[in-house]
Image 1 (tube, one colour):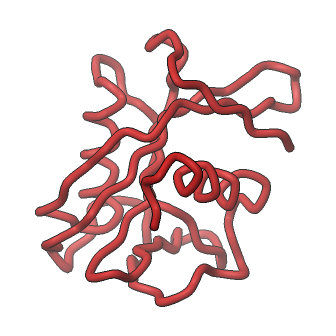
Image 2 (spheres, helix red, strand yellow):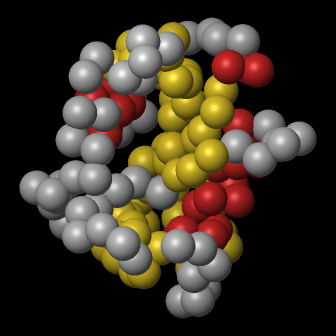
Length: 139
């Protein structure tokens, strides 16, 4: 699965937001209730939301984050099975406070020293992380 990165893209094409989040120097990952894999917080854009509003909402719903800084990295696209390109916006967040109660389909949010072996989207998520590093957002 190929992931393409864009500096600029038509806002109307952005369907979801994904957030590479860290807290106290550790990676913040989510485990969905119906999966055994790990993923970055993120989700689909609701009608009327900006990509940043989506990122803020999803970060709160899926990790309980109440205090954080959020920075946009870039837009990206992934080719779907029907040949269309599905586009999202990538962000990085530094989380400073979290509420233990989650407000979504996520079973658990937790901190990790290392990256997981069991990514939910192994053909996408590691490439998002790599691109954020190339652009100077992950050090």
